[in-house]
Image (tube, rainbow over the protein chains, first blue to last red):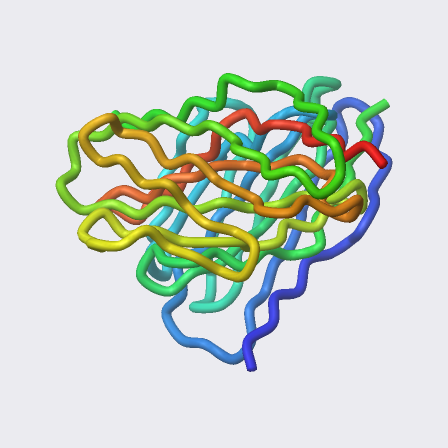
Length: 111
Length: 113
């Protein structure tokens, strides 16, 4: 069966520090991969999505970047975090853009 | 460009009553998919129901049904016989032809005993 791993569950980082959030999927090949951010009590904002290795579509210009070094690995990064980067980050996968399955999320607090 | 709109930020409903959560969408893609997800306070995203743009019948999954009105570009979620455990945030989402999936701002549903 397919599973998605996202870590860490919580993270507290100072302003200006780097960020690396990792997401891996098991049990499927060539999935579409997505990164979303959710501000407290708000909706999900699509940040990046990828339909294949090395293929990244960016939806929101900001200080975040994403990479897909392997078929089932999706990484969200930042060189210097801002206070506004705080939020709940969710990774998701789907096959062919159908039903998405979400990771447990990472609660990031930038102080 | 794709757009999803949920106009109800919050709803209060008496237990055992039916609930309709509104969702309208806009896309120029002829082929698309519509989803509903539930997010309890734990933060996990739970898939509820899916409707394809070419599906002739409205999707149903247990107590959940999707009222798909293509001409009006609406995809409302209907929950029959609501339960206390249905209290959560509910998100409508849409997938376009490029497999991009975007979400609405959500509706917070409160079920009252």
